[in-house]
Amino acid sequence: IWQQSNNWSEKLNRLSRDLPYGLWFNEITVKNKDFVLKGSVISLQKEEMGLINKFLDKLKKDTAFFKDFTALNLGPLKRRESGSYEIIDFILNGTIR
Image 1 (cartoon, rainbow, N blue to C red):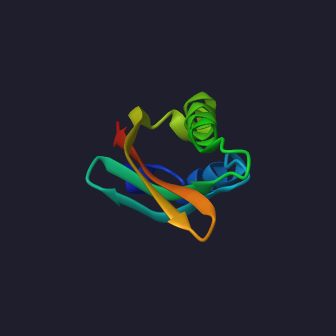
Image 2 (spheres, helix red, strand yellow):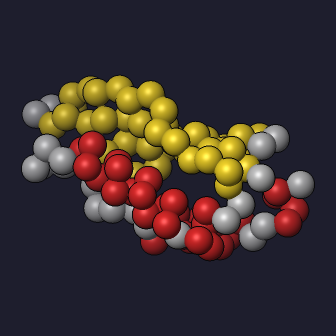
């Protein structure tokens, strides 16, 4: 079982290290072999998609984090406005070895 054989504190630390400015987590769940990270991003330079892709690429290249996954993919996106800012809510889906 993944939860027993892996160090969760290390995984969470890696997630925060790889996190670009302007992106935050709303929810992280692990159930069976499914990993789901729900997050949001805001960018005054309108680079929301670039920040999400940068984060996903960093996680895939981070061998200490990604070694326990067979896949990590970007799921659905939802755009919303908060005042004069545009925020993108996103989901990363992972499959655990």
